[in-house]
Image 1: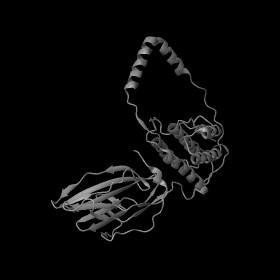
Image 2: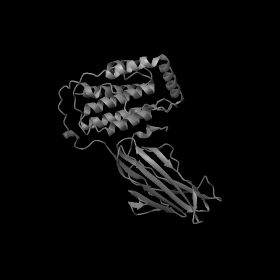
Image 3: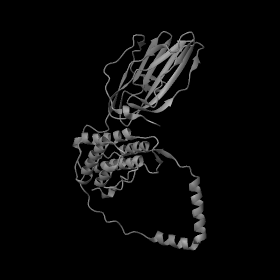
Length: 354
C-alpha cells in the first residue's frame, strides 16, 4: 500500500471541539456484538445519527486499533461518508471494510465503515473530526447538511519498559570448541552423483529450472519489507533480555539493506567508513539525511564494537531514527523480490557477539 507518511511527525491538538449542530452520547465504554470499545459516542443532527466506536484509547507502538463509523438517516436523504485515503493523521490505515448502504425497517438508510489503524511512532495523537454529509434530492449536494463528531485522543506508548536502566549486561561465556565436522554425508552424496550419471543429473536440473521459471515472482516495496523486519526484530525481545548488541547489530543491518534496496547503494558489504565515503559522493540523499545516517551508524558501532551500554532513551531514539528514515525516503516503485527469511543476514553473526 502506498503511504504518504510525511504526516508522521505528531503535533498535539488541544481540547475537544464540539459541533453546535449535534448532541453526543454519554458512555465511554460499551460492549456491542461481543467487542468492547473504549470509545462509543453517538451524535445526532435532525434525521441523521452518527456513532463512533474505537476499541482502545491507549496502545503500544506494536498494536493497532479498530474504528467503526455507523451512520443512519431517513430514506429521503442521500448520504456521503468521509474518505481518508491511506493515512488518518498519524495513523496508517492497514485495513478497511465498507459493506455499503442498506435500507433498515423500510424507513432509514444505514451505512458503516470499519478502519484498522496502526501508529507510526509513540506519543499522543488525535483522531480528527469525522464529518458526514446528507441532503435530499431537492437540495444542493454541494451544500449538504453536515454532522460532525468530536476529536479523540489516542495514546501510543513506547516498547521500552520504565525499568530499563536496571538491566545489566550478561557475563561473557567461555569459548565453545565445536565437534569435528562429519563428512560422511558428503562422501555418500559424491558417490550418488557418480552412480546416477550426468544425464540423470541434467534432467533433474532442467526439471527444477523449469519449475522455478513457472513459479511467480512476488515483489514488494523496499519500505514494506523494512517495516516487516523491524516488527520481527521487536518480537525477538532483545531489549527485554538485555542483549543490546544483538539489537543494534540487527537494526543497523535492516537499515543498510533498506538503503541497498531503495537507492542501489551497497551498504551491507561495506564498513561504516567505506559506506559514508561513497555516500558523500552520491546524489541519492540530501545532506540532512546523510548527517542522520552518519550519527545513526556511529552510535550503532559504539554499541557493537566499543561495548557501550545504551540508555533507554538512546535505544528509543535509535529505533525512531531508523523508522523515520525509512518513512521519509520510501518509494512504492522501489520494489524487490520478497525474501524467504524475515530478518536479513546480520553483518556480525550472533555467535560472534560476546
